[in-house]
Image 1 (cartoon, one colour):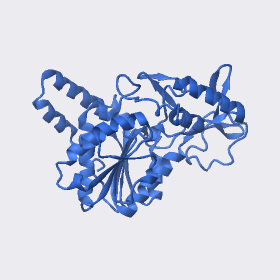
Image 2 (cartoon, one colour):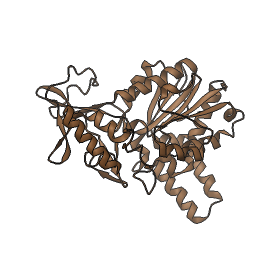
Image 3 (tube, helix red, strand yellow):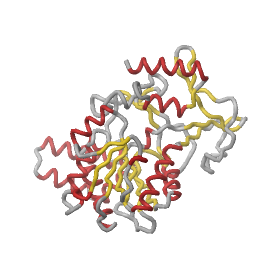
Image 4 (cartoon, helix red, strand yellow):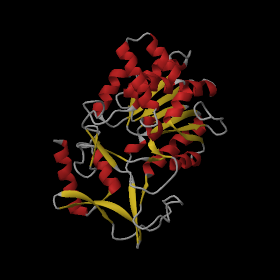
Length: 358
């Protein structure tokens, strides 16, 4: 079993090196090349552990595709260009986006489709839906072309570093193995400096936890630099918070229920909320314009999801109509995904606010 193999590996590693930084533990739990959570399974859908917006309704991917089409037209219809997705799940979003893009003359013909994906299981599912795609293990492998990119629920799975404020200063949180289980512990020495933390976090009360995600900001800066240099546009959609703030957002999902992130590494999806303020700063460092973040519900409504739902329901039988209504509410409702999920837009410098960000 992958879980047992990873558990044994982590126990040996901790025994040899001492407690692991939380970021290292999270990276191994999700991406160990043999036993990692994303390497060993398709985690999506009812039989998996969670459901993403593209799996809720085709409307989501279609509207994303039309947003990218609008940006492609605004950018002068560049050809060729790279159409990329980070962490594309089963390929559902891209398949729906491409279907919408085919209504725009010349766009699909100018595109080369690129997936950044490490999971063998998910690559197979993606190949069935988007056989023309090219696969990469990192964003650094994408071609030097105008870039039109989507990252939906990608950044939340990148490893976070956590610090806790103590009388000694900000100490990094690590993971030890004690009394037969993995437990969070604090490094005995405070971090060398707190410059990695947002200014409004550094003076949080004793006991506060702060999170950083160097991988996320590095990737956002890379995307921005490519768009600033070559042109294009990007959307980052994820659950998270608008302003940097202290707090422990580490969580795990297993069988669509919250679980202990330290209970069964490799058997649950471990994530943390995305700091959109940090991503926006990284985008600007990369030389591009950052728009938002805005909430997913208002964003989709501005793009016309209500009209699209009405059109789909017009020729549907009653059971399908109810499904469309339920999907619309789930994607846009404030009590569902509509407010928890945020959207950050990236465009070349000097571009005006794109659709959904007015």
